[in-house]
Length: 161
Image (cartoon, rainbow, N blue to C red; front, side, top):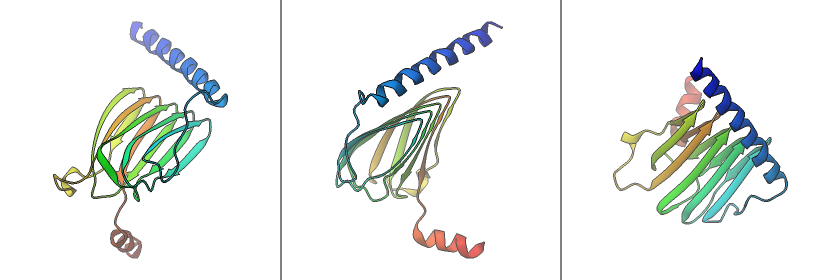
């Protein structure tokens, strides 16, 4: 019973945090910057959806916060700088990151009643492949990272169907 009450209290606190973050976003008090060509970006989706595709020449860092909303970050046309980092937070929402299949992705996560998935294949990349570090937080939400299949693989799968 004590664990249930603690979880209920935690859910209540997270809901209030989500409302406060949503209100700050609506008032434009959280930083939102960068465009497709920027080497740094910050995205926020509050009770809405955001699709972002980066074409950065040397992506250094990015952040994404989804509060009761969804976000897709497409990095398949971006090039990484050394020590590139993504900082992602999903609160009652979801974030999907798509990377090229030749990238290595290392993800650390902090989860409360949510989930994070690194769906990239660690054996498919060379040790000297570009490395993307992801710090993910999911509070009653989710963060997933996947590699985009090569065009030839997509055509084979389409022909098989």
